[in-house]
Amino acid sequence: MESNKRGAFIVFEGCDRVGKSTQSNQLCERLKEKGIAAKKINFPNRSTIIGDVINRFLKNTQELSHEVIHLLFSANRWECMSSIQADLLAGTTIICDRYAYSGVVYSVAKGLDLDWCWAPDLGLLKPDAVFYLKANPDQLASRGSFGNERYEKLELQRKVSDLFDHFNEKESSYWHQFDAFETEQELHSKISTIAENLLLQVADKPLEKLT
Image (tube, rainbow, N blue to C red; front, side, top):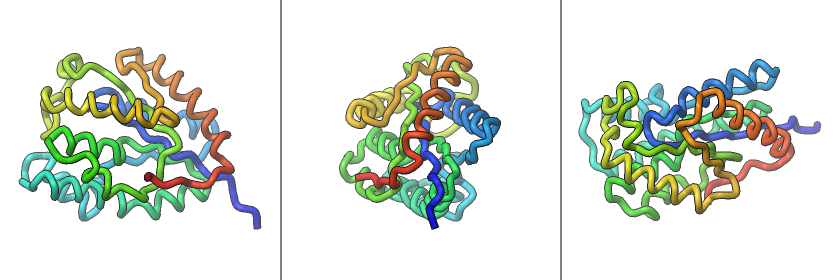
């Protein structure tokens, strides 16, 4: 029996408060309106056992070492891999708010080694596209609720921004950079165009793994 066309795996990345949630939600809704099977997910997934520990840490109610929380973030992605893969192979497009890149850049910004941080994520599903919303962290600090969670500190966000730039340059074959300060509608239009073309391009391609 011939297999279905697979869905696309699309990830949104960028500093805190750049608009990842808004744009990923809008993209998911647009695809659904066009009759395309689509599902929105977030990392960390706070609904799992590991995700609950991460949630307490992010809300500053639990202390963990940099190494421990990094490995928990990675484990949180691994515990969701089989369901993501099943959805993709069944033809559902997955739109993911944060992924392995966030895990690495936040830990490296806190002083951990980049290669050590990347190692636990080797073998995770590789996104078909990463939509990188780039913004100057100094401008982001003026956005609502900035600073409510542990990592929303300006100095850290500046380091995070530089590290995202590094990934964007290194992985330019599937990373797409956008100016996060364009209007919501302009961003949505550009992102949707790329995403809809991507669905056709990857439909018959095998899933790849991070290396």
